[in-house]
Length: 292
Length: 232
Image (cartoon, rainbow over all chains, first blue to last red; front, side, top):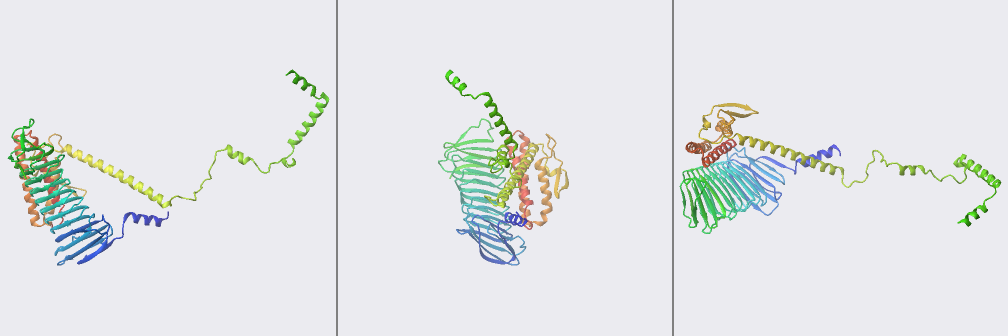
């Protein structure tokens, strides 16, 4: 093999596709050939981000700016990046239409992010920007400081982490992992079999069905925890708290004695057959088990 | 049997005839063996048979430097395959080594985590000795694990991240700083309350878990804040 062949081979291995780059743009509206599972990346400080899907092996990039804001565009068949991180003033309004199976990564400071219909992987981060996701991502990772988060629907796994941002996760059926310091956490119309929630002072609400083989762990320091369960639920619910009040108003909840724990910190309720395993730990947070 | 022996004896020539015949045959044989192959008309082989015989007796030796003239794949394909195998093997070794190191570090950290007890000092009150190691600020905290004297992993991490956050504070928006500080206060209050409770009930596993989780939350929050982009 000649040296030139080695060079060509190395380049082919390192750079999977030809890349086009355009810097300092103020607007663009273009449609590019794009792999169905390609990666769309957006970095925005202020403005807005909207991601929708279509059934084409192409990506539409429509970006406008206000003020002095500018952005860079890097595009290949496998990856398209809109980078507006250098925009110190003004806003970047970005709309992308991607193949449904695409991977979407958004990094926003204050821009709200809306994503609909993505079935691939999604990784969304904001500082103060709100995040609204509708659809069925295979797996979604969300991280925010104070942005409000809403994730609606989907069999995929959901992981949301916030500092003070409130979060609503609706109709989730995949594994749900939610973390916050002071933001409220609400899991609504849930049908998940795996839930893991940790918070310090944020209130937690789980309103949904429990899978007979499911496992549900909720940990809170001072945040109140509410479990709103259907009448025909079959679950074994363990509650441990140092000073929080515990109330079970669910008609099927029967308190069982816990032999290995002290009376004032440990409770065990059995609802129906007691198949699903639920564990709630709080320091001072109130715990309520109620009917939906 | 006896009849055949008698008949053979009867057919034998007399001694004189036998001697003459024997001498003639002996001379002819001597002459034949003394002659060169060319002198023996029609007796020389048409070609040299030895190489063929030798080849059957000796092991086959391939000529050095022989090259196959036909290939199933081009040479670069083989090299590409070899390179892929090499890359995969290297990546595997690197991954294994990295995971091993990570696991070892994790085990070291887990081993050095101070069991939450009421006697654990407030990390914020610890005496810090800031250093720089490889450009990254490293803060040694005076608080030590009472069991083995090692620095408390949470205290060390918290002190280091707080140092980073102090440097970064001026780059962040005031409202972001306020959000971070408000939530740090929530966490510190939770830690303080849990420690106070733990002082009254040091054997409580629930409180020990709560304290550990809340401290981990503080580390996570400081890490998030430290990684925020400038002007966030």
